[in-house]
Length: 328
Ligand code: SAM
Image (cartoon, rainbow, N blue to C red; front, side):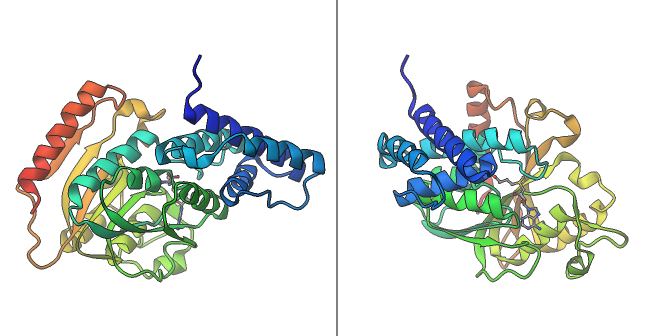
């Protein structure tokens, strides 16, 4: 049986991570970051591995040339090893954006962003799977990207993922609700962390803060994104289906009415989610600005199962037709 390039790379990352995990007494995900860095730098960076382990690692790295893989092969192999690591560590906040959603948002960015060069930000970049899936799906575009995440391990994985795929991304390891030192961007993509934001003092800086108790992190992150995007810029957020039904929804609606145009809402298929209450949609917004007109009607779609190629093709054509008829 022929082994695919993704499997070959997966096996290398997995086997070398297991060696480093054992040698350095660290978690699998941490070991993955270490082996990814070795692969990128072309050397074994860890000083405290035994000579025997070092020889084994060297042999494995020498068996393969990462230059021979496409970006999507690297991203997919990295995605598989990270998924394996996440299963082991079972941290609820460590959730990677699935492939299908990344490719779909990549398609939307490609169709909506007609400029040949632009700046893109993901303020909850996590492992970089969504960001690099979107970058890999842009044709003939020059993109400066910015990735921010509060989790230091995830952002390290993100930076190694981007390095191996040769995407020049500026990374910041910080809370995205603290002040951001980034110039205004043209597009924001983000699979938002859903839930309460624990820092009530920082939340005071936001219109979308809750009057009582903790505020919703996903609401505040949308406000922060709108603040850092240029007028006319597009925002693509993965949001919970119940976004407009929560107790804080009236305030969110008011904020949207004042600052953005709702371009569309694409509901992801329910079969993607183990629990229907955790089901999500892709919300497409555009920041208001001079001469920015709302679409004749918003793009409202219930996406079919993303594994049904025919049904997906039909929907993508429908989305493209809508964009051609409505986008200024
Ligand atoms: N798109 C990411 C990927 O492909 O790996 C996954 C995003 S995950 C659903 C949400 C991310 O938000 C997590 O990585 C989490 O660490 C991050 N996060 C949560 N609160 C944050 C905050 N206040 N500032 C920045 N990042 C935050």
